[in-house]
Length: 254
Length: 254
DNA sequence: ACTTTTTCTTACCCACGGGTAACATATCGG
DNA sequence: CCGATATGTTACCCGTGGGTAAGAAAAAGT
Image (cartoon, rainbow over the protein chains, first blue to last red):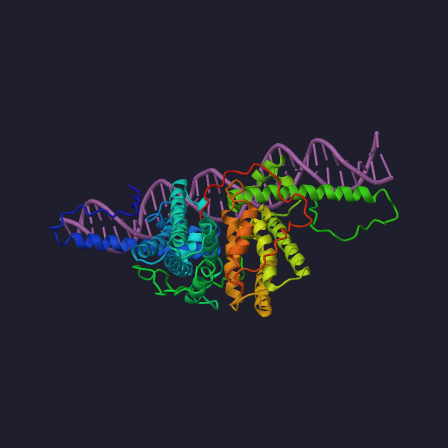
């Protein structure tokens, strides 16, 4: 019988009785080994997709970079566009956890907005983060595209919510939250298009500057205390492996 | 003998002796008819490319929308990616003429920057304008890609120059022109990704708001006179014909 | 050691779409 | 009205690359 394609996210408890000690660990370690390979595929894929663009990357290339062959990929993914989606999802999860963390903390609307700007900037400098804005959702299967659209909408809503909260609590000048959010998110998203690892600007430099630059016009007092806690992207090991990475020329506004 | 593919931009003076009155006019009118068809192809193409994405659009579709067949397109263009490039160039020309006009006029660095923001916003709401930021330059032949990169660089340099000029003449606070330009251009470029004709926001609304929003943080006085001359995109007939235009859902930050 | 399951390879299929060849038909100058 | 030149059509080629079938090789289980 041909490969039986594991569904992703089988997070349910293992159906094995927890009394037996031996079969559980191997099972888990096996599953983990599998997940690690899966993630390795995603890391290779996202890098190539960003480097060359989704349509110019062949599955043969992805496989080659992992020292396997194309059909082997189909043990982990059902199709090329599913790989794209999973890369995208990795980025979305990062944003979601950032938002969750900010929501958990307190502070004014402005302070939350600044935290978001800061963390989001850092995200845009990672592969999975950049994939959020550089991948074309129309390449996804409709089902996945719908999921992605929903996630984007949540993120957008968060920006607007923070801004609206800021105008409500007085930390942000009255303004149209929709357009203000578009402006800020636009500037941030665009980072994913021009940032290059080997460029002059470090992610923290960009983050610090943008945090000021994008909110100074909104703040009620000309220079409020900017709480900078340098929030690292939480609970993810080494989300972007230091690999070769081609030139990525450019460095312009577009 | 098979089709002899006219080179674009044969702007050199007609080799016909200017004494003869009759052969010159027909020649001109013929050339113009040809150019009009060429441009019609570009309008159809840019629309489809934006709608569905370059790689999902086939030349058959482009041709079909013009009531011709695919090989007919090759009378006007050498390849699909050349069509893409020409679409992109149309946008670039629009920006260039905007910049030329602003450069011709006077005003402080801040005032020039605001003019640029205003005009650029309006451009992003047009098909050819959006193509500037939504097309992937890696789809172009290397020669054309180089041209496009150069054009982008010029645009970016203009943003920075206006900002630098502003800090020099005192109309703009001291800041890093590079990062400030990135922030502003990012917010503007992103418009090309979320703007939709049938949305709530009109181009002028967006332009007016962004002109304020993106520069208020930079201005030295909290509220300078904002010269709003509503500069129309110059000397181009009806750059975007009111055509069908599919849904374009979304409306989020990404 | 033998079976079973998972993982991976070799070899292939085939739809799609850019591009071309050869031929038909307007269009135009004269 | 006629040859020449554009302009367009029908029919085809073929490289590319996603995806699959069948079976080898490696682990795991017993």
